[in-house]
Amino acid sequence: MGRSLTGSRCQHCGTVAFPPARGCQKCGRSSSEEIALGARGTVWGYTVQRFAPKSPPYVVPAGGFVPFAVGYVELPEGVKVEAVLECTDFAELDSAAPVTLVATDPVPRFATEGALARGGVIW
Amino acid sequence: MSGVAIVGAGLSKFGRQPDKTGRELALEAIRAALADAGLAWTDVQVAFGGSDGSGLADTLVADLGLTGIPFTNVKNGCATGGSALMSAVNAIRAGAAEIALAVGFDKHPRGAFDPRPEDWGLPAAYGEAGLMVTTQFFGIKIARYAREHGISERTLALVAEKAYRNGALNPNAWRREPISADDIAAAEMVNDPLTRFMFCSPGEGGAAVVVASDTVAARLGRAVKLLGAATRTRRFGSFEVFSPSVQGTGRPSSVSADAAAAAFAAAGVGPDEVDVAQLQDTESGAEIMHLAECGFCKDGEQEAMIANGETEIGGRLPVNTDGGCIANGEPIGASGLRQVHEIVTQLRGEAGDRQVKDPRIGFTHVYGAPGISACTVLAV
Image (cartoon, rainbow over all chains, first blue to last red):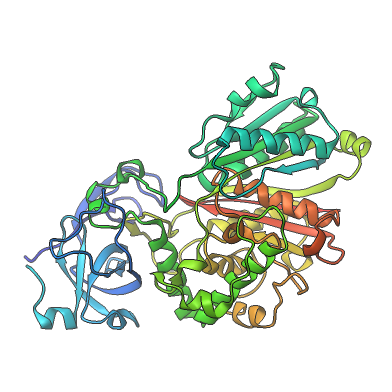
């Protein structure tokens, strides 16, 4: 079993949420079960963070700020999860690029095929 | 149920005013709105208002006069003004008052908003990772929309160019220097595809509106009819700022579409009958998407509409004739009522250099976090 994000599925209407829901946004019921979400998805939308966000709360990486991509990854369960996106070139993220979960903490992090092949990803 | 009319609208100056507090900007707006209506504070029978970060509206009575009226504080993000107005309108409709006031104001510090993850129900890690940045949401939403519906980066620049051009015609605007589309497009990128000049900035200002029953409005004159108004919160499947996920499949729902449709239904008119509109333009992409969400065009038609100048002051559907949020800045509590003020001014034919030719029906739309919208349909 590889790494995965923990979401929830409503036991009444089947709506999948991330993070796990306290109440279902669709039907309003509160009976849900935790599920492991699929680790592969496609980029639903993204932008590039070109400037260093305010610190605090932002923690600047040890090597200094470099622009990074942030967006939403559509998972097989239908839910789109906000994540930092690793890539070798931002253009890789266009056209529903396939991406793989590489970290769940502190926030979800997915990488493109190119970034995985480059091996620059810390597992 | 009585009809409702807007009998007065007033603004403070917008933009940086280091010597004034947010409350003082609210007082200026209220006094301007009352003077516009030919009324005194002692005529107001109920009031609603608020700011996002500049204090409680009900404390304004200390400077307005202690008349004992009910004054309810409203705090609804970017829809604070819209929600206050809706409450004032409902008070008139309910027969609880014949003259009601709505006020919104704010005075934000320089720079981007500084939201705390905990206030949004998110782990602190989202802030540490650099995801508590409001502008990211706008970049992601318009980037996806532009790819799906063929909106060019040039069109994003043209919307901002119009905002600064209209701001230059508006003596009350903050940004009054025209900026060319080329310079806007070449400015530093904030969140792709949006550059620095395509965004509004947190700002300062106050706005107030006086509404009255038809009976009172007939006596006062210069009234603008409120044909319809609606506020809505988001439905399932919407895509909003600071969302750790977007649930559901297919196209996200739009709270702006819901509020606009409800306001048009209440008014009994359609978007095609509107002569002048104010649409939330947090950044240029928002104005483009809100044109479609509010029913003024189909997705993708904005590219040709904007290239043809249809949203300019001389065009088929002038949008944000006062320069919108981009030229006036975003004092969160005030923006929704600034929009109403501009439409009232346009419908009365009092907009000076930026006057649209003989408008009969106007529309206002605000949208804000965490998925809230307020719309009005106004007419003379």
